[in-house]
Image 1 (cartoon, rainbow, N blue to C red):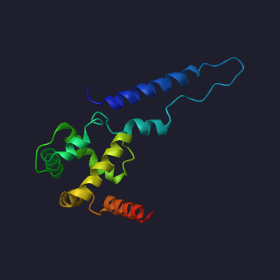
Image 2 (image 1 turned 120 degrees about the vertical axis):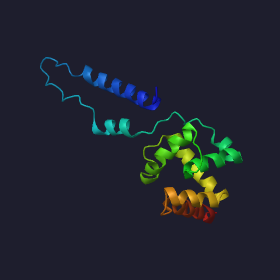
Image 3 (image 1 turned 90 degrees about the vertical axis):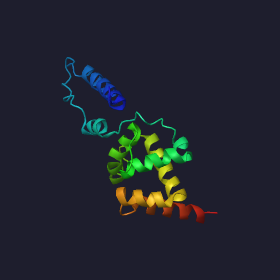
Length: 155
């Protein structure tokens, strides 16, 4: 039924609201607590988190199998068919890059870094084509190269 991450977040949200509501009953002699509307931060977290249903995709298998990797790249370029996980990636990638992956789960953030580093270091031609589509200013590549050069300078 679609969005397990969203359902899980809504379950946590419902629990928080239920706990907050238990404190809403006025205790004799004490003022009534403030309204129990959800905090704007909690609403943003529920609305903005990317779906985590593909968080357990084996990235090493994709990166180490030429055929699989090429299929993902073709999907992202719009020149080939997309698997369900590649389609979701293609849909969220522009937003993830624009927001510096702030809506990503930890696994998604780790996976994004792993894949982009692999492409930059091992498949620069593929990276350049994808970069023109998704990050034309080269923001991620520049950050990565600066970080890599600093790491190489350290003793």
